[in-house]
Image (tube, rainbow, N blue to C red):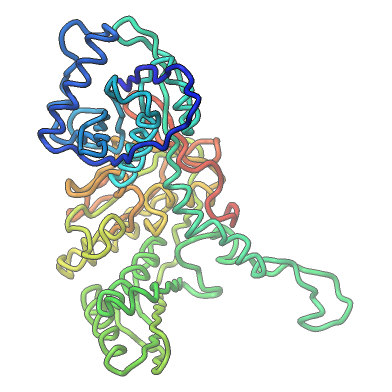
Amino acid sequence: MLDIPLLSGPPRPVRRRPAPLRIEIADPAQRAEYLRIRREVFVREQGIFAADDRDRVDEDPRTVVLVALGPEGEVLGGVRVAPVPEGRDIGWWSGSRLAVRRGARRAGGIGSALVREACSTIAGLGVLRFDATVQLGAAVLFDHLGWQRVGTTTVQGVPHLLMQWPIDRVQRLVTGTKSALGGVLEPFGRAVPAGAAGGPGAARRPRPQLGGDGFVGDDAAPVPGADLVAACDAILPAMVDRDPEWAGWCGVLVNVHDVAAMGAEPVGLLDAIGARTVREARRVAEGIAEASRAWAVPVIGGHTQFGVDPSLSVTAIGRTARPVPGGGGRPGHDLHLTADLHGAWRPGYEGQQWDSSSTRTPEALQDLAGTVRRARPAAAKDVSMGGIIGTAGMLAEASGTGAVLDVAAVPAPGAAAHGDWLTCFPGFGMLTADPRGASRMGSRFATTARIGTLDTRPGVRLRWPDGVETTALDAAVTGLGTA
């Protein structure tokens, strides 16, 4: 319950400069003072509770208490934020027990500052849903801060509003990594004059779509006239510069998994390395070579250039007579996630890159890469920089559907905040779609779970244990269209 006493008072003719205010996570003494202020507000002033307002949230070790401190370090008020369901943290938190000391209320702005800091705090904790139960008198404050009204309820017989802080973390992620693709790649599918290929004044004809018919937006592309597929991925230059061996390893990892997502067996790699010095290029090559041995895929060629800014791109070639499309899903299909939960955050990339591969045996890595090839689902996509949610959006977009994900059903490592896991780049994660009950995905080195369904509504929605759905993506991810 997020309660705010009315912060009103008589108008003052002279506007004074507010006293310095800082907000921080409470230490034990500050926490005790915050509890005392709460009792003053909710028990003695408002009479909402008979004797004490403390509850199980106060005993949860995950609960974070934020306090507003005055010029002398005195506690002026506070608020707590905590996970909603007991047990595993699935990225659903609430703010509650916001209280400001009676004598500090005329200064103004303390409640607003605490709410803003609570929103900032949960953003750093991998939270994807943030709720509050707000007294009617405080609703205007929350409206002003951008909160959304989603319902009504009563607490101890007192009317309250159910409110929600809009979290656009996933939308911002795909906007920064995927949403421009349709426009950027439009020339490859645009109608062009046939005369450009011979014959002035000839009628316009379309170029073939990227990937070919049925494979728009896939992780790899079928090679026309052959039983081959090819994938090409570049590694961020900053990673090549900062961690060259890891960049080389990842260059192989992402390409092998892109080929594997189409049910193909990887058969060869090519690389293009740019480096300032011979030593830097050698370090990247060592990472590529180690990964090549681990996945048992030979490097068959490439290009190397010195005296340039760091860069790396890798191409993988795979073989299959029947590629699995990323756009093969249909409304009503189940969505499954097969993920390797082994490992830890890569140092320096916490919350962004989960490293399950560098400590796996070649046997495990090769078995994981064969999951789609063995199961042959209706649709498959390797979890990429859009994370599990963004990748689900791309699979749905290519399939001409939407998707709803059951947040609590998503398997996740215990060491990863759920919101981070749903938006990170995992070492191995494969999303697949199949008719209900038909999935055969699995590996003894991974966990497979049904995490949602495809439907006819655009975008991706998150379904929470209380049945509420929140919008993670409100439209198509890439703009490339359906397959």
